[in-house]
Length: 185
Length: 299
Image (cartoon, rainbow over all chains, first blue to last red; front, side, top):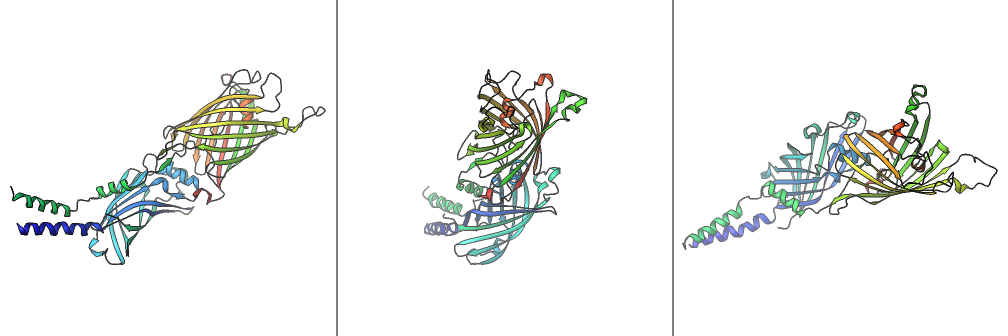
């Protein structure tokens, strides 16, 4: 009876310490995409990406409002939303994934750690598996995450009209920069 | 019974330790934390003109919009007139977006050697989400000056006699990706009219819309109904049909209309063709945008 109680108390006491400090989040993460062709370079930046990183499980989720991508030219932005990613039908892109080398990252100790991430990326209503390498920087009170990976537009059923086919790359580079804060439990 | 209680407690405590937070739950948590935003409707129409008249669209801030427009003679002129292409009217226009809500423009057409200028301002923007607004509403005010030499130079002539004004409220709703409709209550004021039978102030109501055929092609139509008894005999209701073809930075608008004019006051009050008689003018608007200021729209 006494041993039961002891075990129970020990378990209850440890739950708090395990889950409290393990989540990080941001609402102002940055995702940039870059398309390079001999004719022109197109870049768009979204500074309103929200994301949660669970350091306990290694899980990461991202939500990206497509209309928040800012282009250099207003017409590009309109075509991007209206014709290519169809933001009215598919307002958000999502990523659900996890760190596969969680053991190699010590969220309790400031430092720079290489990170491996796999997961499912949904853009334009199409979900594809994504695997990439990045960096996790642990600082006092926060975590930064960076990654860069290419995506092929055709994989996400994003079709580019013939007249601008030479202006838009078939494969665009996605850069992710997150500056997480510790989340209050 | 008494012995089961600690066992149950133990199980509950153990459950707290399980990694119950899967990615889906984390995503739900993320969505719960997001603040609701206002989603403004974009691309109600492909460009700043519906057919002859204005649409609720403004050039984006910092964007210079060039319009080169032609209207040819009547299609029923037959092969002798090359189906109207032997006669051409043209208008050259520039428009500029000052903000998300304000644009200005100027133009010149050879018909009556008319200069025109306008200011267009967005009063409401269609939106969903945090702020719901069913329609976009824009106001348009134009002024135009006919600069032909006076027909009768010997009598006293006033510059004010050359001026006409158009005031419109443009009310549009994008019903779906394909269908957008627009209503245009309109008032035209002409300082000088040819005969006493014609009204200086002409009240009209217009309706139009677009249907998107494919990502880059829409079919547009526009019609104006003037209240009876305001216009001269032989002046008819302007009805225009257009096809918008978008190619990157250009929009080509191919137009069939019973009006030969491209200036607002003229197509509204001087349309002298009848569709049923084949008095149809073919024409086009060539729309091209230039990004004059890259920073302006990012604000």
